[in-house]
Image 1: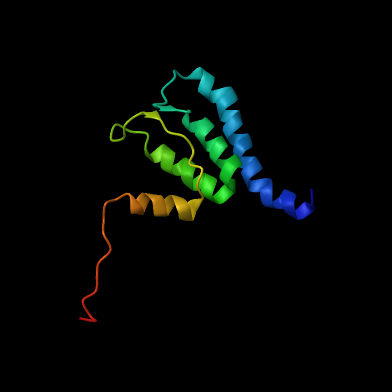
Image 2: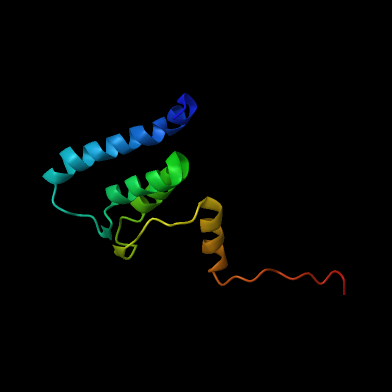
Length: 105
């Protein structure tokens, strides 16, 4: 592995290390409170490993923002899609239709 590849992966590796410290030392001292499967920390690690530092961090933050009574609990896997495909899938399922133009008529 080249030095540039290692430097590129460094932020992701550091963040995963911090999450694993939390999972090892802090999480066991608290009662289980996560409303989702996988847990939020497990989701964050998987998102970072699958999608890299930037998009994985966005997904992990989005997941933490769902951690309240306003969102339904349950199974919430890390999406397979990258950022562009994920955003397209969210907007295409909204039921909105594209405006049509009457200019040429």
